[in-house]
Length: 338
Length: 293
Image 1 (cartoon, helix red, strand yellow):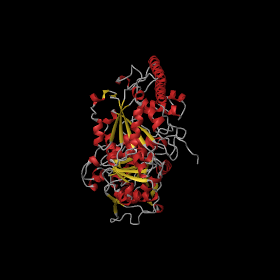
Image 2: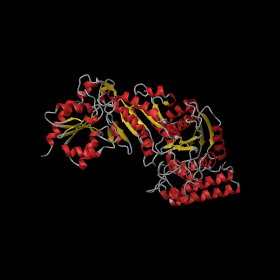
Image 3: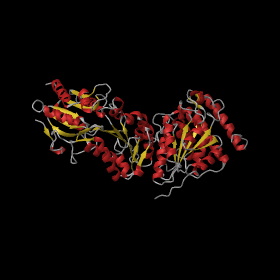
Image 4: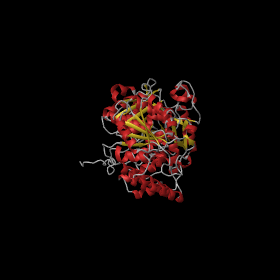
């Protein structure tokens, strides 16, 4: 019977109805300020979305290190590369559909490839904050709901891709990104999501954390779907013993933990607020098919664009809830060979 | 810490012209060896590169990471054969290595790559992003009150990229006086003449409207190029654009002004003729009878 890992130090009232919900981007804003305090060469670039991305907190504290570029995401990416070339650690902040969406080639050439095979200490230290990712952006509709950004960033050699599950983890991810050599993408949504981790919850780039132990099926999730995965594990507790892994780092994938999990439970379900190919689900399926083939079911957006609506109703309509994960777990377990 | 001495600046005009001639010959030689690459742009920019590498830039070829150096960003990375030739002739690496251009395992990638070759400040090729990077460097250097200057070379064709103007707006707003952009105004691009493909004029007025200082020079008159770069250094309110009017393929009669020669290398026989023409020009420079600037 699966149980919450005490070493994950999750909140006490994890399943309480009144569990505080916080905007993940608040964590980005706080993380930027912390990074600014720790590293004097951190600068924050903004393309006309200072408050929305929460980079205005950094602007208030370090006005001389905040650069406003107007609505110009392509310029922002390359300009950040230029600043990195002379020793800065620039964070570029916008909505994920624009950055890394619109400026994808600029990120590819002037950041990722420019950093590729660099000598130690010569990496291009640009950090990309992709806000308003996922359909839970809500009423703004599909144009502003990034569902392909994780795939875009995964495809670039040398890029680190982070998808934190809540505000506190986003804050840790942002601070860790500042000290991590080379380009990093940090993805987060707009809505308020359950705040499930605490200060003490471990976070290390490139390492999956077991939030819940179990022996029958492994659920690997990130972003807002992580909480849904924990809910699913609880719903299934009398039926299927589920392990839940927090995969905040989609790239580089923690292959060691993934392999051990697949060996132990024999089937895997992935869950993410992203297209069900190219992102976390794609990464997990690619690895397991080559190294240890077990049934894999992927919960994600099934090759379609989003639409307007309230976050909760959209998550339900697009199949991104605990109930959808429960169904996927049953299918995965049913596919296991004796 | 070891004291680094920058490369001695060359003031003698005849010596500079001879260097430009050598660079042109090296471009032809490396392109023939490569069997692919661009001819027109590199030949057209040989005089600008000579002015920069031997007189304008504060740099130390044996110490490409020297902290006090000026930065040269080549936005139109496809003309890199001229940059490689200028680098070899100023001491970054041996001229023999120029023959490895575009070959498997080379440091001289078809479009320049930063970590492949020390002295290449940034990876480039896809047009329209160099001015942004140069502006980012210039802005960060100003933040840190550093004296290094940033030079950005770009083509006229890439003025068609929207990103170029995003960067131009930013540099104008922030009065990046430590940034000098030099545009290769050769009027050609892959599909034909720029004014047919997408009219760019009035280029000078466009940049002035974006709060830049604009200077125009004959891109084959080395003295004019040097003077314009020095004039740019004296301006403290604005970034400067130097529009260098050049002849693509300059120095090789059958390549000059022909868009056909934008993106292909000479064959062996063509290279032989090209080198003969360049040798003849060299003789005229030595005799002081050259009329080109």
